[in-house]
Amino acid sequence: MSEPLLSQLAHRLARNVSDSEKKRARMHLLDWLACVAGARDTEAGHVGSAISMKGWERATYPGNALEMDDVHRTALLHPGPVIWPAAMSMGSAAMDQRLDAAVRGYEAMIAIGAAFDAHHYAHWHPTATMGVFGAAAAFGSLIGFAPVEYTNALGNAGSVSGGLWHMRHDDVLTKQWHVYHAVRTGRDAALHVHYGATGPQGILEGPQGLFAAMADAPGELASNGAGWLIDQVSFKPFAACRHAHPAIDAAMELRAAGKLEAPFKVETFSDALTFCDRPEPKTEHEAKFSLQHAMAVVADGRAARPEDFTEVAIAELADLRAQVSVAEDPAITARYPAHFGARVNGHELVDTLGDPERPVSEDQIIDKMHTLAKWGGVSEAHAAKAVELALHGDDAASIDTMVEEWLA
Image (cartoon, rainbow, N blue to C red; front, side, top):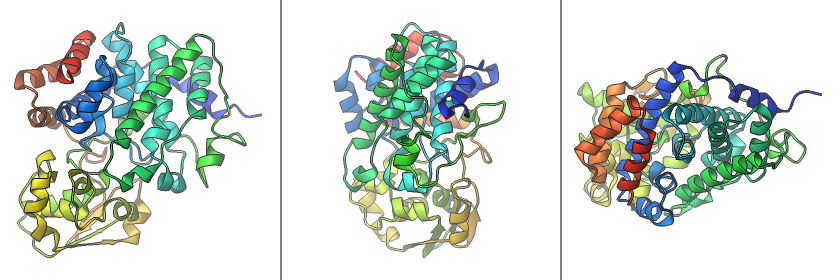
């Protein structure tokens, strides 16, 4: 009998985390802090502030509210908003322990998420369904789990995995609730195992497990060989759904070359149309999920920042949106999700800014921190402090205090 998949993954999680991976994790920590700072004064931020006195728990709500959270392409999920609150949730943990926890949390969430298929993504919100695994691994790392404990915690977390996409049809905060639920559920799964609970090792591949319930053709768990999967995670430079980023990126390249002219023809992969074919957005949320609005933003000379997707911007860009047409290109769909691509007025990009093939720099993540902090009403001094603490500091408690102050 082959070793259960969760047991195989648990042995990977028990490896030592290298200094290079911790350095990479610091970049993702800063990126997440930027997203939290930028969304502190949103509806999601206000709910987060009301639900708890603890910074890590408050931060579950604003972490993905701006649609600028990090993303793994083939797993089709956003690890940062789930993993960082879980990694911060033991106040006594030192910075090195938190960085280790984050790397392990990203590993579990992505490895399992990449095994699910298009059927799963059509119905289920992977950040929620896989987030419980990531949070369990991250908190288990903080506790100091051995492989058998990781296996039990992942099994119990997976036994209550869920989160349906139906919330996309309404302007609601269910995505944020999904993140909160994933963090708390995964964290509790690890905590209960610490006190003696056991869990089903075959929750993925078993006859009544997640593959049987949630996928038509599940694949293998993702792996980065001797490395860690956090190295494959993309950053998001634009304040819109990730499916709109390739078109934004291509349009910006055309604009920089002086060649972006109406009418605007966008050709992209099928999921981009499923999520973002929205010619007449009415709300900020809808604008962030609108290829038409994204094109109008770029055509108007804007930088695709949060202010470009507000109701004021929606009204200002109506005429430009009307000049945008969108269509699927089967060849671009065939390369997806390994490559998020788009073609705008004949100019094609196979990979998008922020992906590992076209990485953003540390300076660009620092600039993102300052930009989003300003948008969220966080002082320049606090933004600079966040950069220093995340990229170079060892004072984990100061990060906790800072986030609590932002979300007070």
